[in-house]
Image 1 (cartoon, rainbow, N blue to C red):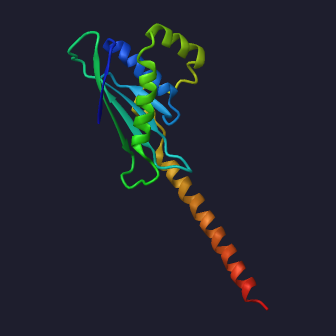
Image 2 (image 1 turned 45 degrees about the horizontal axis):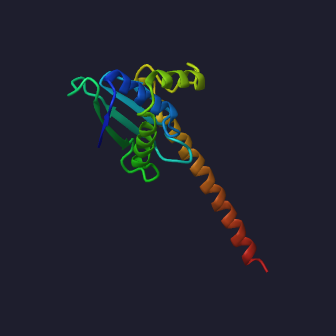
Image 3 (image 1 turned 135 degrees about the vertical axis):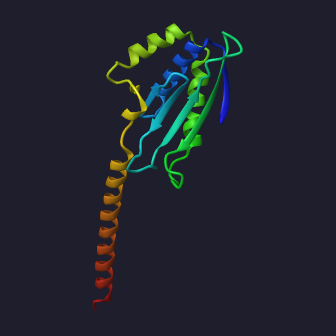
Length: 164
């Protein structure tokens, strides 16, 4: 878990966090749950089983112009070797660090120009995140077919090598 202090009000800090999620390559969807913003990397056919990025934004802050948030990233499947949640957290922190000095109104204008409401990664709640089970089934089938193809090719090569 990483703690970050943003020199903005709580609402402006949430805007910066959402803008960071919008600009991340590794986050496919995110939702604002009030005291936390959760981003999700979907499982992919070539990568891992996905990860979840959570930014906790407590209601009670020491100062009205400074917001302390906690950033945490974790794998969706603990034995997944292809997903590195630290990469996702690092990407978020880099983007948030770039955006933290920007005026929030200018940031909102830039987002409105760059991203239409239909293209936004924001979803109403976490139940709208994609279904990992269907992707995992497709990945298993593709892996099985590729392994069978290699087995057949290896068998043909061995047969050809044994023929005089």
